[in-house]
Amino acid sequence: MSEHYQLRVNGESRPVNDAWLGESLLYVLRERLGLAGTKNACEQGECGSCSVLIDDVLVCSCLVLAASAMDREISTVESLAPDGDLSDVQRAFVEAGAVQCGFCTPGLIMAVHDLLDQKPSPSDLEVREAISGNLCRCTGYVRIFDAVQRVAAEREE
Amino acid sequence: MLAELAGALRAMNVKVARTLDEACERLAENPEAEVLAGGTDFMVEVNYRHRSPKAVVAISAVREIAGWRLENESGGAGGMGADAGRYGTLWIGANMTYTEMATPAFEGLLPSLTQAARTVGSPQIRNAGTIGGNLGTASPAGDTLPVLAALDAEVLLRSADGSRELALSDFITGPKQTALQQGEIITGVRVPLVAPTDASNDIGRGEFLKVGTRNAMVISVAGLALIARHDIQRVCVGLGSVAAVPVRPTEAEEWISPRLDWQQRSLLDPVDVETFGEMVAQAASPIDDHRSTAVYRRHAVGVMAKRALVRTFGSN
Image (cartoon, rainbow over the protein chains, first blue to last red):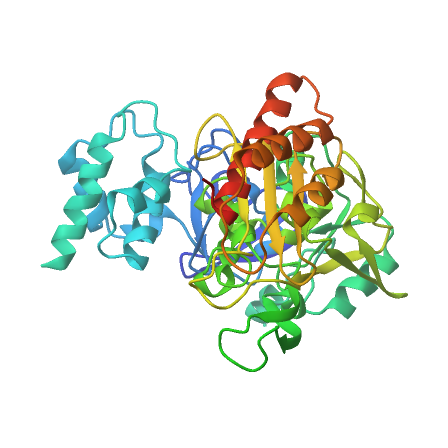
């Protein structure tokens, strides 16, 4: 338990002290940096609830060795609404009823932002593929698809 | 002063290498150090306490082994014309991610590898996982491995002592076992480039097929790559998840290849297709496990072999 390093998270330098070198980025975000928006479920990349951006690339933070992300820019779900003003995707999820228990929501929000940043008008298949790594056991996904299409339409205006 | 100190804070036992030399040196200095690529296999083992690294050399920032490039390129049978086809070799860096293998420019060169890459995990996994990692893990279910086996890929290795190249069949020695030695890094693979550039000619484009329980986030129950190599007029097939290591059904390849019309997209004799499928199925040595049964896996590779052949060459 002797590693000391720092990470760039949501635009800030955050020191990590007395860490074990095998800690995942997910663990460090939640347990050391107090950023609990990123959720921990499967710890094997199956569920997508820990999705974050590293240098603008969507990854599962449970599969990132935290100390190996030392020189990278990490963005978590907390970066989307720094002052409590929801992003358009977050607002659409609320309005479309795409949130039930809410556990998968932060990961889905990150995946949907990533999708719409790359493809402003995605087809249904593209939406399905983009969120295929995010498990939701409550909604059946229909309202999540609604939320995505709402944002796509809004952004087009 | 304090800020400077903070800026210098680096994990002692995690080296984020920028160059291959740096990575090889660190591995040579510390025999306990383990190589970390995309992390999609490595970190699962760490998270589940099956692996407890004491030192890590992360190679994903090593630019020398990113991307791909054409080597020894030359025009094919037709000479200099745009339709002549390209023959040569394709170098694929170990750090190439599945997402990068799915880009249109790469798909134009090696569509079967793009198809394989698109079946891996989810977008998040494909953004992180690499071809070097797929080789290093050497799982019987590794999705790129049937394609690399069909192409007789050479695996490129480097250590502080120098470089060497191994045929894929010599590199993968068993389930999750490789010939990689302590201190060595997989730097990439080299495959023959066999794709004609003429988009209207589908011959030679090859296929990758995979059976799983659903379309996303699925580990292969059985996988098959079929590549029609124009340069040697041979259909080359790689099988995944049906043996301890990737399988080449060479008898089936040698039987079907002379029966095909290599000059034009021809219609195949359905009896030949059936025989080819049976021969491919016989070459598999599958097992029963929690994911499927041996009987089903053998059946599945036979069906995929027929389907891939017909898609590549057409049928009556």
